[in-house]
Amino acid sequence: MTAPDEAAPAGVPRHVGVIMDGNGRWAAARGLPRFEGHRRGLEALRRAVRAAQELGVRCLTVYSFSSENWSRPQEEVAFLLGLLERFVRNDLAELHRAGVRVRVIGDRDGLVPEIRALLEDAEQLTRGNDRFDLVVAFNYGARQEIARAARRLAERVAAGEIPASAIDADAVAGELDTAGLPDPDLIIRTSGEQRLSNFLLWQAAYAELVFLPLNWPDFDRAAMEAALAEYARRERRFGGLGPEAARAARNAS
Ligand code: FPP
Image (cartoon, rainbow, N blue to C red; front, side, top):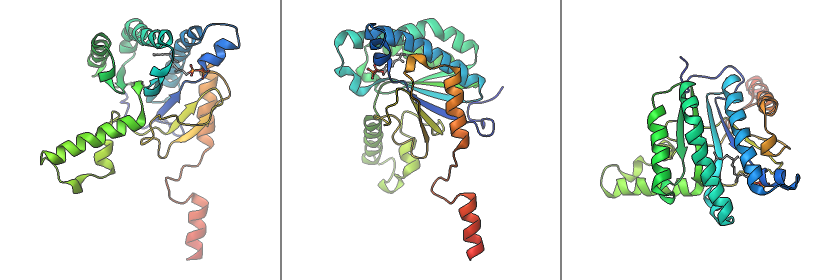
């Protein structure tokens, strides 16, 4: 069995983050209510999980509800909470059979106890799976996540558990909701918008960004393939030199 932390096939991102945007526009373009866009968005999410698994990705993080989404009309918020519940209740058994480990990131304290328990049960059931990680970002905001991590580190320093000098980038990463997961190699955003909108700001430091001109409900395997193909064409340097520049530097010295 392949573990999610094993390398993905060459040229394939190990961890893909997705900003599932454009549900409302998809619906408006068809004269449908916004919730219909979200409902179709859940179907697209199922296609995305399947495509990622089939194409050799090990981990998929999906932005399902941001810390800022509470400002939407109450009925839309209730519908999105209901979709999360529906997704976990309907799909968990199949995900578990497929060896998927489910993890939910974001601020759980902002959710009602019934949903919190549902998410905890899903994580508990699948915690031993090691074929694929599905990370659902719900009530998630990267700035809030980083602030929570900073607060926990400050508490540990105040309690005398660690010296302040022990706080480095690894220590911060270890307190984030994503602790233990690899950083995303690729972030995909649909709908043509080109921004991160408070998604994985720390973890995406070296992620490649791909913006697709389709709305999320239209996302399918071909769209995933297109994003992975674009990723495979990128040269990742992580702040170092590319092979050509490195050769030139060597020749010049
Ligand atoms: C952004 O589109 C999308 C969301 C805020 C919700 C994403 C939810 C899903 C894809 C369904 C799956 C959900 C769960 C909970 C598992 P938008 O509504 O901002 O679209 P717009 O910018 O066109 O209005």
